[in-house]
Image (cartoon, rainbow, N blue to C red; front, top):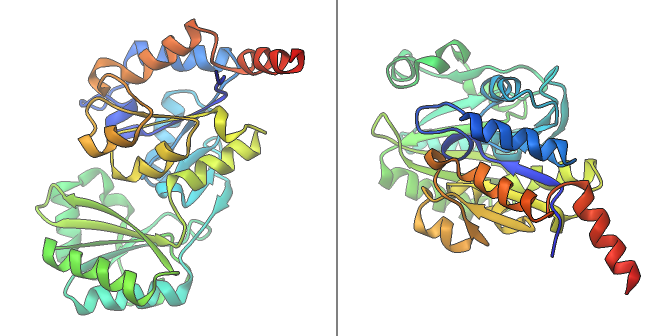
Length: 295
């Protein structure tokens, strides 16, 4: 039986309850995991600017995985430990294809340059103001979005009607299969279909593997908690992949274990269960290794 030393946890729909809070039980379980010697790492599709406040609220000082695995950084000072940005030529081509199809494109500048998100029209800013007002301070108008694409951006956020997005995903896959990764979020609050575009090979499993290597932790000693499509790769990658009870059936179907929902403190319940049977933290690994030596 494996002992687990790294807990990689999605934020929205997993760690946070539906009202955006972290329960006292979940916070206590995270503290317990750390006390036992486990590393707790956030693994999210959020940007650095919206991940850091959560890490600080939880008093986590371990690296965070942001931008769906494109970035690993230290929450204390937001220094970048690893990043995989979109090469400028690929970003420019993907952007031009999307714009030619009539899609809106928001370009996230390279994390090595700043934290801004650029759009082309006031209408797109108004859309953000209505549906995601907390994000508005990070958005800027840019006269030359192609110029931003030429700086190796972190990601492109593309929105349009579903038939347009479906066609774009197919076209990108056909024309530039070794250049891009995509995360399809479906219909969003503004009624538009959204897909994020990243550099090829980017997913949360990439970030989890980096953090594990940083701490000398084997893949078999990792746990991943998630609830949505951008969690699939890390759930499959982990020694123990855990889907939340509120996750869609296709996510629960690929996981090793299904936890109760985020509103039922599912993450906490799994941590408590593993701690109770001695399978969490450094001690779990030491006991397993000692047993192996006896044989």
